[in-house]
Image 1 (cartoon, rainbow, N blue to C red):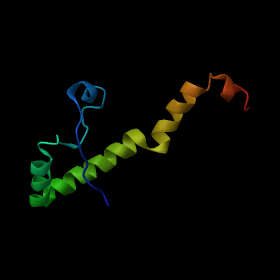
Image 2: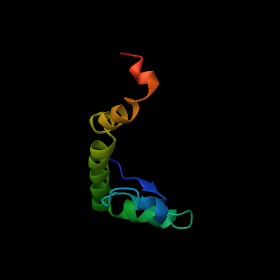
Image 3: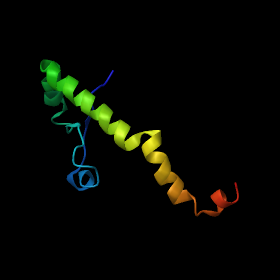
Image 4: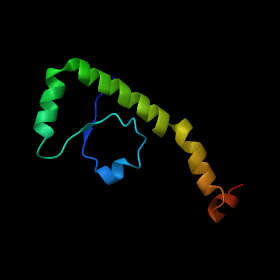
Length: 83
């Protein structure tokens, strides 16, 4: 089941994410309104949930993260000594 994500992401931090970051942005002052919007609009909730699932699979899955982690760590002495 895909679930929407509500979070606060500062503008300067958001610049480091891919542009399609599919989250409902909320602050402590707006979280009630954001929740109400998602509760009252199930199609929006479902759409965001599906989009965040695809986003996570694309950017955070084992297949997408492992090559980068391996590349970064392959040159460390710890990794060279495990072969």
